[in-house]
Image 1 (cartoon, one colour):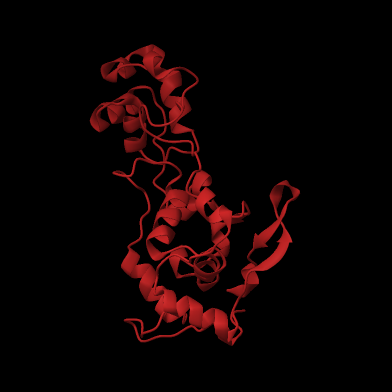
Image 2 (tube, rainbow, N blue to C red):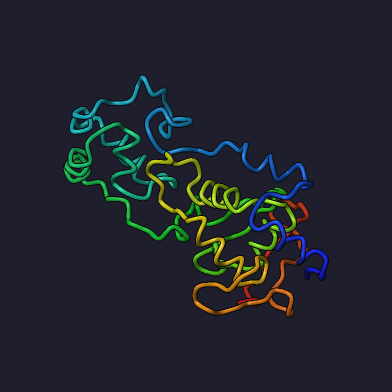
Length: 231
C-alpha cells in the first residue's frame, strides 16, 4: 500500500515516467516474442520462410499437414492468422481448410487464447490474466505496480500491455489494444492521478483494496502474483 509521500509523487508525475526506476522497466520493452505473420519473427512452421507454400499451393493435397499444423498452433486464433502466416488470401485459406477437412481455428477472446492467457511483468514474474480484472487495464493492482513500482509512463504502460497481450503480432493487426486515455481514466479512478474519472467512480487503492502479494511462481522463482480471492 502506498504511503502519502508515494501517492503525492505519483500524482505529481501526471502520467509521465519516473525519473528514477528499476532497470527492469526498460528491459521489459526489449523482449522478443514468437510472432504471427510471414517474415515476422521465427516461422511457425518447421521450415524457412523460403520453403513456405505459395498461396494457391495450399489447395494441393500435400498441403494438408501445413494447414493442420497452423490451425493447431497456440498462436493461431483465426483464419486470418493462417492467411497472414502463409501470405495468402483469406478466401483461399478458407477454401483450403474446407478442401482438406481441417477444422477452422475457433474465434476466441483474447484472455482465452493459450499463448495470450498470461503476462510477464517487468520483473520477470508470469501471472495468468484470469487473475486480473477484465479488461486487464482496469486492474488497480496492476496499474499501481506498473506506474508506481516500475515508474512507467501512461504511454509506456499502453505499449507494455499491448506487447504482452499481442505477443509479437504485427502492430497493424493487433488482437488486443488499449487507449492511453483509458489508462489515464483508470489511474484517476484509483487515485494515482489527480482529477475525477469520467464515470464518477473511485476505487482508492489506499483504502485497503486488493494488493499484489509475494508468492512462488512457475519456474520456482519468487515474484508477484495475484490471488483470485481479491475479486
